View 1 (cartoon, rainbow, N blue to C red):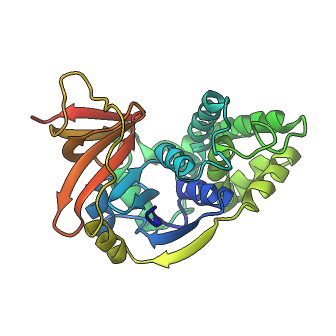
View 2 (cartoon, rainbow, N blue to C red):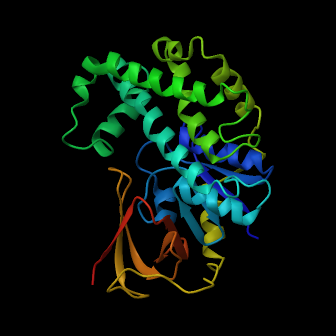
Amino acid sequence: MSDLIIHHYDMSPFAEKIRLALGVKDLAWRSVQTPMILPKPDHCELTGGYRRVPVLQLGADIYCDTHLITRVLDQIQPNPPLSPPGQEGVDLSVSRWAETSFMIVILAYFGIGDVFPEDFVEDRKNTMIPPDMNLEGASHIVGTKLLQLRNNIEQLESMLADGRPYLLGDSVSTADLSAYHPLILLGMHERTQAQLAGLNAVAEWMTRIRKIGHGEVIPFQSTEAIEIARTSEPVAFEGDPVYPDGMKEGDQVLVLPDEYGSGSVTGQLAPSGIREIAIHRSTERAGDVIVHFPREDYALLALS
């Protein structure tokens, strides 16, 4: 197995989800610090333009999006599983609900102001906020967003009220990591921190998740990661590939994320299964790589 390389930055809550997943599995991994804002030349050299973190690299295979990365980690080391057997659907549902509901905190911070560094705010405004969204008016809805956030956290409290240590029972799962990682942002301002007041079960659960740790972290350079990609061969696909109607292996395609500002990626359609999209790219520095995306939340468009 190739060394696990994670491209991320410390402040990213989604990267914290994967760092904790590596801790659950007690894995060693190489840590490449990616810039928080554009430009990200080495990061995009590997992904083809996808700008979000985290990204998992295994040799010349590049995996984008935490929903796919957690599945890959379960394939690499099945025990302990991140998605409990028989509860995969529940795990996915809670994960998607939590990440959708709790990331309200980001919009609240834009409304509160002076929470994030100025260059970070400008980068997000210019590249990752839809043109029809007026962040200047976010200050008028902070109160509403904080109440929505409190309501969502109280639902977590009710899930944990029976004394279970984790959201789906006795074992930590992706659902826990997905619900936890946005909540680490609450401590950045007193108004958001206050949304945890009196929720003792949530506080104890957060302490349990935090104590998982990140596994064995090995600092690594982005240039070294690119060299590993250049000198490696993508893993051959096994099984029966799945292609959208009218497409075939080798077609020039565009991968378009549903989430605005993630960055689209072009390449040649490569074999993949029902749960992911894979495209082949070739660059001067990284050589031949396969970039992988989860099937959900990503559109695939034919360019030829």
